[in-house]
Amino acid sequence: MALGNIGTIFRQGRIRQVNNAIVEEVFVRNNTSGSVLISYADRASNGMTFINSLRLNVNRNTVIFDAAGRRLRISDIHRGMWVDAAFSPVMTRSIPPQSNAFLIVVRRSGNRPSNSVSTGRIVSVDVRNRSFNTGRPNDMARQNRFIVTNDTLIRNRSGNPIRLSDLRPGQNVRVIHADFQTASIPPQTTAFYVQVL
View 1 (cartoon, rainbow, N blue to C red):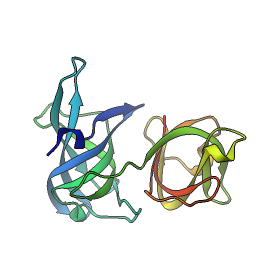
View 2 (view 1 turned 90 degrees about the horizontal axis):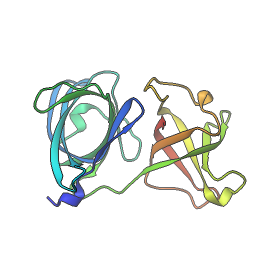
View 3 (view 1 turned 60 degrees about the vertical axis):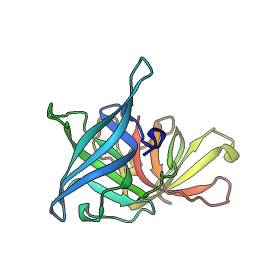
View 4 (view 1 turned 90 degrees about the vertical axis):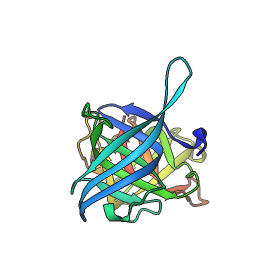
């Protein structure tokens, strides 16, 4: 496996996130709980890169999607899949460390996943049409519109679930979204997970 194919871990407020991690092992207790062992790259300040493992504990509060936004169960995750995950910064001191997963997005099996994470400042929120825009104010050509579905999970800076109506213009957000977008201005795509930064 090429080192460049493995994602890195980073903090967003009180939530940690890893993108492009590879699934090493899946343990299923039932359809709503178990654990997923992932590997990711950790780049040290001296420029060296280490491959680390993390066990994500999955429970009934963990949201699991595929790249198209369809809900999955832990039993749908298999070794070799690429995933993005948001999880608690509270970790055990075990080897490998363990943390509770809030969200797992299965990118696809095998090859390196395409990137579908965007960060930007909210320009407007349209609760009636269940969408919000990020980008440059007063320049629709430099904005993105994210459609919010019943399955979209939105979390505040502390990691607590909030509603679309709680989002405000000016807030900086990281959005995990579908790989496709419309050719409209602004382009539109479906948001799976929104994290206020």
